[in-house]
Amino acid sequence: MGQFNDKVALVTGAAGNLGQALCAALVSEGARIAMLDISSEGLVKARSALPDGAEIELFPTDLLASKDVERTISAVKGRFGRIDILANVAGGFAMGPPLHETDDATWDRMLDLNLRSVFHCCRAVVPVMLEQGQGSIVNVSARAALAAKGHMGPYCAAKAGVVALTEALAQEHKQGGIRVNAILPGTVDTPENRAAMPDQDHSRWVPPAALADVMVFLASDAARCVTGAAVPVYGRS
Image (cartoon, rainbow, N blue to C red):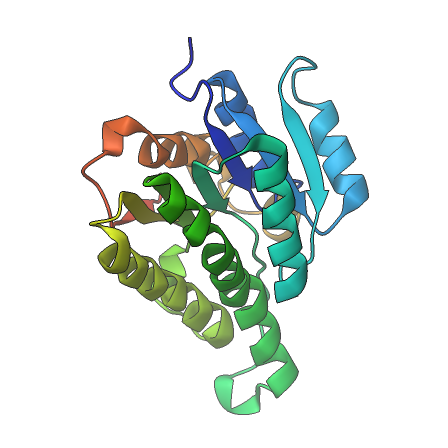
């Protein structure tokens, strides 16, 4: 028996490296999964790597379109009857020019991918959790939220916003049975990062499965007294 038997987990960015690792970890604990991603093909491919017997539904969704998010959350509730876990994994990273040379499109892109997407999903899912009287939200921020670096201003600001949003939601709902936490990954060991930084010591980076383990803990009853936390998961990176 898994610790999430009969629990429903909604995972955004489910076709990405961390999203796939988290879905695999949740399925292994008995969760029923709603996989969200903007890429239909990516969802189908990610689903094919998970056990055939798992209860999983795919929901292609544009997280930047609030009405699309609302439709998806309604569909997830209609399909599963509840949402116990929301994992906001979707996001994006890009280096850029110095802040004084950053255009509006670059700024908007980083805040949309990393912060607006979290806002849209939390706003749509929290009412479902309030109706249930319980729920757990786990957001993905970044080490850069606490230690910003040059040429990453919009990304750092967005990830810092995720921490602030996490803390605010935790305060708003700690009496309503909803816990809200975040993780702060260090450098994640992905094929994309390896290609971008081939000369780095990849053994020091954080495997997606290790991040998934921490997210599973934060979503579980073992973390029942943890809310408003931003947990560093840096490995040796």
